[in-house]
Image (cartoon, rainbow, N blue to C red; front, side, top):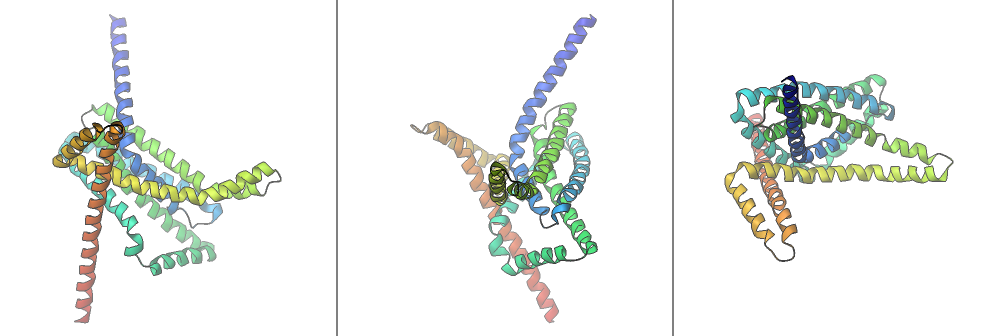
Length: 316
């Protein structure tokens, strides 16, 4: 009897682990776009500090990120337990925010003047040239900004993950959310630390006497800025795919259109399999771009109205 109970328990644990594995894979796939953007944004956030302070800054942001997860995971479980109807609206808000942020990046050079970018660059150079006290204040601002960015992106990832495990048992939800939260924190900031020190490693290797090390060093020095640019571009593209996919899934008419289009494309001669697989992604990207353009346009119009009303008030 005891043996049978033990076998049943082992079978239950195995089933739970199998379910967790499947749900974790689904959650990772759905959050991949946000993770790419998280990586690029956080790598950008810690640039501008002195080389010897880069890793301490990454460590400080990493600790802040763990605190963010310690807040977000229990909050997500409470929502799932007591307000499950809130998951879909939160997912839609997260998807809309991804689309907005992605389109704002694309439109940045039109929405923000060159003077703004040059002013920010001058502020960084001045901070680097100033005293240690000023540099510490600059670092603290960078860390606070990075932790705020991490909180927003982490909230999106946790919400998307929660949507993927919404119907599962509490133990499975807790396990998957914890795996995603800890995995993304260690993974993202481990990679961020590697990226921000890549140029330093390249410089050190390029100064070594061995020609092979010099060649590797030159490669790393050339690859570091290209990697940052690739991460930024890939992260932005993924934001439209993930954000648009969430919005399409949440609007039944768009979801049915996507499914019908994929079925039609799959029947095309020669390219049916490829077309059937790419069509939903294309629809998600178009929906994401359209939603992002609408939200950025609305935000820009509201800002213009506010600045107009403020200036008219002062003139009076």
